[in-house]
Amino acid sequence: MKKRFSASILILSILGNLGIVPSVEAISNHLIVELDGLKNKTGQVCLSLFSSSQGFPDNKENALQTQCIQLGKDNPKITFENLIPGNYAVAVFHDANSDQTLNLNSLGIPTEGFGFSRNPTILAGPPQFNDTAVVVANVQNNIQIKLQYLWNFNK
Image 1: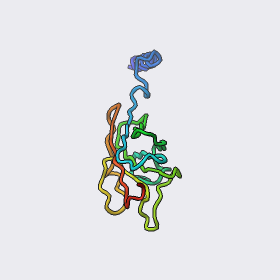
Image 2 (image 1 turned 45 degrees about the horizontal axis):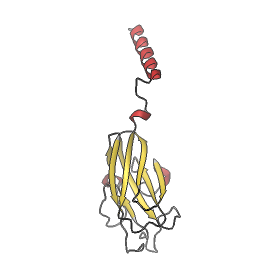
Image 3 (image 1 turned 30 degrees about the vertical axis):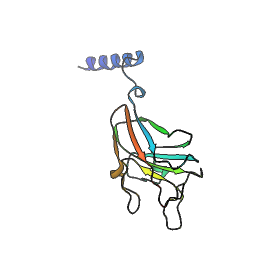
Image 4 (image 1 turned 135 degrees about the vertical axis):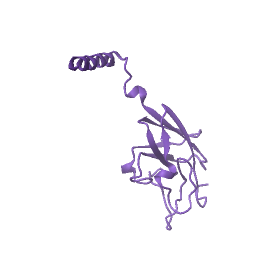
């Protein structure tokens, strides 16, 4: 029995070195985020990907991945790579002044556009992780986020 187990391990390691057994990189999943509703192409968009409710949506320290992308003439598509299957939530904001902060007015209301995966209705305060989480189970997963602008500060 011990010989069979050792032989199996040896065969798997040889096949892995030959490239016959898929590597982790070959089977990793991607989440592609398409943004809609940008008021203008000034500045950048900043996205944070979370795998749990801890720190969601505004604590970048707890984000699994973060990206800021300069805006151009086309609506951006942002890819988060090397994800294991699971639930993820995305928070995004239109950083019009490129200070990497979601700017707020004196009442705490965002003065820049923002959005979340699954496009939840925003009533009072940010949504919960469970209201925005999407399942990443395939090699390529696509979502669309519509940015919201309160009070039309960014024209």
